Image (tube, rainbow, N blue to C red; front, side, top):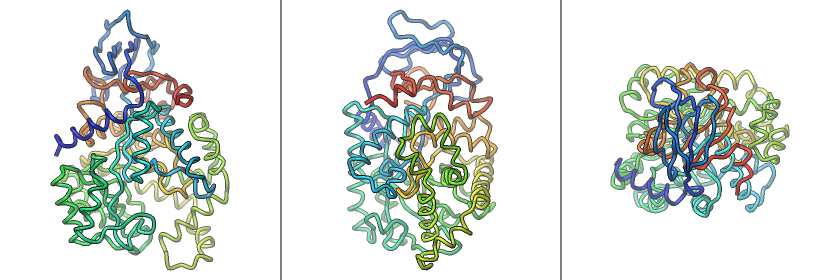
Length: 467
């Protein structure tokens, strides 16, 4: 399976590179290479987009020079759970298809401006996925783009009102024909409901077995959307390679589940932003942060400041958790059910669960669910990734481990660890040059001087202005 994934990912890398690879010499760097080694002073020489040499005495007379001036250099970041199909707040605004495409292009630039050099879209509209591949292949600025394609949805289940559903083994095979060209895995939605009791059916045993067989035959790992423990157990029963949400907002993981997940080797994505970004409604001053203002389109910021956008999201959330509740009552219920205190409590519950699972040896991967639903106005593409890493630190992971959850660990999950994830000779020159030390304070990840992608270095402002 690994060989198959490497071949497919390699084809994707060639098809989706953002710009010509470059030569570069970075001097006076405090190197945090992502391997777990202690930081050290070094120069980094890049040739044709790959790291050619690292050491205190490395030099070159024929390469452009970046002087890090003692700043920290880290591997390019990976956000392993994004949704580029989704433009934050587009439902509230009624964006046209042309406007959405223009905003998607801005989102791609925003990832690079925020130091994110690789993204995994865990469920994309196929037409959008193909469009993103075309833009990047034509030279548009953006991160390395990988996607699972559209996910497997159950009739009458979660997302069945917006995506084609799969009910039989024959339909499973037909769906694989759509997914396989994207080539890095398959997504299965295992979501029984967000409220206190189940509201959606899960895939039938027959369909699950057909997905497992089809994925194995094609060498594609299975990524499963699951939030509650029972749904995560069902994911492990399918041999999940990764679970795309930390979940555990309203429960505590059992000892048996912790042991089983750790023994399985499956990866767990964080997606703390689902709760954390929701807090922007209660603290709109977060929208004034310099990085947010620099990288988020003005129309999206305006929507996020609109109190009606927050109320629409709240009514939608209540309807998802309790679809039997009359629409006329959902706004009233939301005022009492969706509060700052409750949102913070649910976020803290997820953070505790991730800390416990990490301590048990579960490999943790940074994923934001950026975009999420188009009715969500707060989960911005780009800066949300840096906030997610900060939240991992707040959850109790040491800064080095939090950084590795956005570099080395997702690279291994994607079978790209020979190419990205750490700063080593021979690997692609995906780097972030910071003014400050992120191991002292993860908030220093926001102090970006340059993002280097395949050897091409630009400041955040230059990436945002690129085309």
